[in-house]
Image (tube, rainbow, N blue to C red; front, side):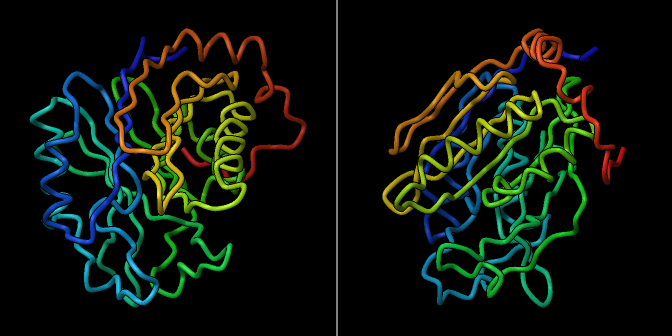
Length: 263
């Protein structure tokens, strides 16, 4: 049995600037009131910029200006906020998601770096530890993934084995041939195969793909953005989650044991 009834979520599909101060200011401008969960994209504290940029120069600690402002806005809105930043670390910063309700943050450090489609994220950033990161929100268990992690189904399954009922995926999904199709297919696949909600918030065109999505545990798209800036809203219903897991008990029907699950 779930310990929640419903969650109102907002996905902020907005472009991160190269000016961190402007991005901090936009947190309050863009975060809507009335949502239980507000999801900003990956790297919202400061965009990746050109591949020659030294991201270490723009990395911050978890008690630095960006995470502090995120917590302030969360407290002001009486909401939980999630957003991406570069976290100071040696030898390379982490690509980190910060989840906060105004109190101490939950931090997820991206595991799978985007060394694909001609990019080399690992040249500038370090990979996080291979372990699931979850948080509680109003009785719901929220699992965190970032962008390229979406292409690795074993991480989503690890989160679900640890109790995730909603998987949140902030992203900066680089635009290109087939990329929107890959994005939509992978978000829906992670929802269907794990019978979970997936809340996936991306940065908009032209550099990125947009199309932020909320997908229910049976794979139905209940909200989708276009490719421009917008704020997308949806309601997640615990009864729908229970229905999906009853109609399609694929998690219970597995013949291969739980691999690497952690409480």
